[in-house]
Image (tube, rainbow, N blue to C red; front, side, top):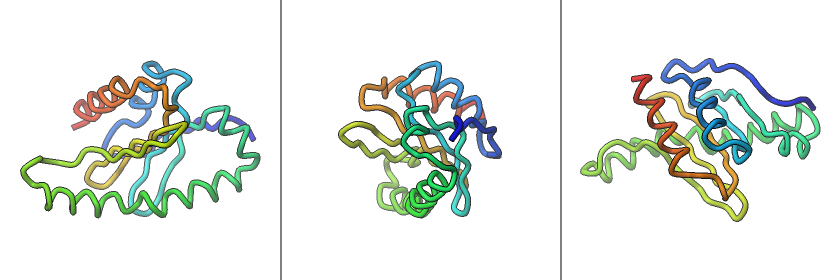
Length: 138
């Protein structure tokens, strides 16, 4: 399977610019990057290491479908957390840390960004990079 490198279709933010800045900031620690909403997703970047592990486009599709089944609920959870913790303001992201990697999902009103990073990635710089781009988009 060839490298995954696609163009954004998001309306809420400039995912292409966010990805370019993340790759500049985090380099080879970026594992995967996708944009999504409640119904669809678009994988924009898949690191060569992951491409090597997933041999066919069908395997990638099955993997991405499985992940999207969970992350499409982010928009419902965002509203729930904002209701419960209203004094803290708007929910901007969800994160999950694993032994070898981390996933950060930045959530807008209708669209989100999925970022997978190695555990040794510069997380603060990555988060700030995305936040700066999101601020420019609004």
